[in-house]
Image (tube, rainbow, N blue to C red; front, side):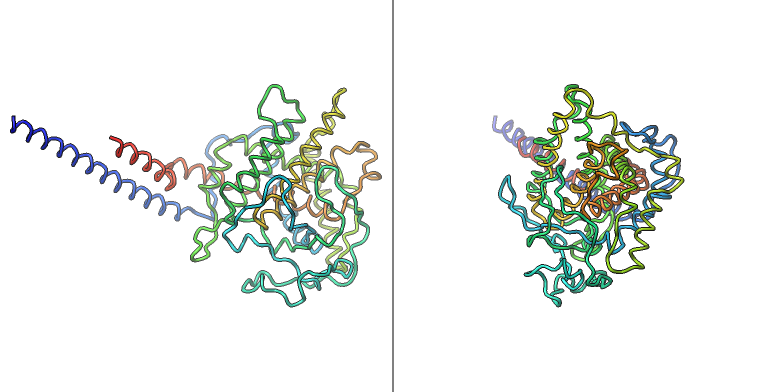
Length: 463
């Protein structure tokens, strides 16, 4: 009897020992997998996208609800749109954006925390702007602490005492902000505050997008939704995808060494893995592009006056080149057909409803807990609101040139948004195949493996 108990105890110990041996082997295997995955990730070619042909392109044919196909959009963007837009946003006129950065969140306390210095926005010194733009209580002429140590942050001195003329101060009915000049507005050089990863993550960041989708965009897809409601969802989804692409494309890979680069895994997880998000990105790009082309007469005649005649003439020339490029006009003259919307008896009521929803989305930007994220959120939402204002003006195309009134800030937001979307489309087109191939070959990223390990460990402890 005693002998049997001893043998039973011995077997139990052997079984327990074997189980812990298995655990140890699993731990070693996971450690090796994480290490190899990390090494593989670090060897991902950051600047050399694969242009190899791998059969039929993943996205082909007409972009849903638009009038251009993916192949044409990619070609025009690479050859015409992206190069022109990159030049336009660097000009003095389009470089500076007027924004209200210090706002109280109307929905909940602003408890968002940002752990990177890159979350903060560097304001422009007052001497960089015309006299009429100066505000009391802003940065002194020598207060450049926030730009210290950044060679690329040298202040552009091309602006003098001449005011920007010929622009109205009228609120956009699609957005929440009071766009008129007041003491709460400040001016930001967008070239010194690029849209990139800032460390703004977690519940605070997720809450913004959750509110945007759950409170303002009905569940999609749904048979009950009308075309206009679906388009609102696709615009927000496309904008969200674009922002995610820029975060992944300019990501802080190593905070200790301040190493920045492309995070293809993040780009895949947030955008590329979901074909509808990519399609919505293309849709939003064509939607905003249509607004710009529809307002071509207005934009051509606008005064891009910054007090620097050479730069101002260059700006006007670049705008005309973009608007009237013959290749673009021949290949994709009408990127999106807005005339099919707001039909029937419910048209006016539906338009008012969606306008109110988008205004709520605009108000949510005041709840973003990261200053730089708030800056780009406000700019891009204002740009999208300006596109909606242009496309859905009551007077139609024939009277648009006489009835449309845009603020200088709206035009700046519109063109910078178009540039952001253009850049996202280019990145997805060029880097998408590379990111997808890498993720297919190395599906177990460190975060995935660690998550799996936790689950295995939990099960082993229970047994």
